[in-house]
Length: 464
Image (cartoon, rainbow, N blue to C red; front, side, top):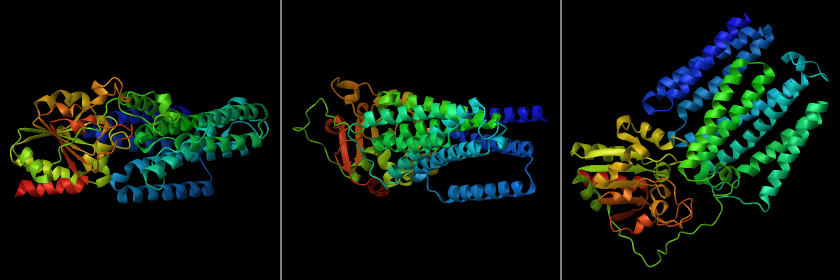
């Protein structure tokens, strides 16, 4: 029986790997989701068969599955795509909480988990539950803060505490101290001290991070939740949980690194809450420069008479929920014979793939959406670059000004198009706190206003 279970867990692991591969591209994401669901179904069924619970225990398990599954199904049906970032953060918090509760259950009833008896828990199991509980508690509160920031219930601005790095270091040292204490003595006090300190550390690590850094934060918390699950998997001796947790943890860490590289910033500086709260200034003085303001009619004329238009969506599009109006505008232009493409920067939005999800919701064809490295060379041949709500990811200072705080960050070269139409509420700076030199270039026309409203006015003007 154990050999069959190991084989089924291996099958689940393979399906999880195929799921990750499928989710790497919008065109295969549905298939990836299907692989993941089938893999999880096999893992759950195998675990239930191995556990052979009593009738009462089985009833409780089925009740828990019904409550959790029903809630998940309801949320999936009603949640709007624009709220996906905070939904993901909320789910991460539940994974962290589950890790803490499982570790606590193992501590109080070790015989049920096959890790010894009360007072005689295997030492390796103590280490695993201590680390799993610490990471889980940190993930729980950190994800809640991320959820509150993303959902607008807490200010997205960095909250900088004095001596925060000293405080965080002290908390981490205390957590390590109590982990050693739990390993040596199996003290329940040490366990709950670990949980309490990790809960506090989760809050203090995330509150200093600005809202614009949330893509990295969400990815990082995803990694934490995976490692927490893997740690508890060792405690439970569950191969599927170990495989799943390791896959989630490693993929989240790799994605976080890729996104930090996309912002030309140190991963350490982001997770320690350093970048978002620092005051930055651009290397150039734009105080004596002027911008060219345009209207929806001007934009409609330029795009309707263009041969090629490249659309660059950003967080402003998500806030205004302008994706449907944007697709309608693109359809009108394509009907007039205009070649339309979409350019996606890896850190646009509030979570990895945020822009891709929103465009998919608006039924934008996958073959029209391109990543930075695949489309950047085409801006020089474009008649119009339509930037809707993106800011720092289009700032030429990152490419041209060595004194700029964002110098070296890969950007979309929208300034190389013949005309750049820039939709934005105001001339305010982005997360880096610096002016966008693109605003002042001769080929740029600013369309100030709500992204959805401006785009709808352009659609109306094209029709007329």
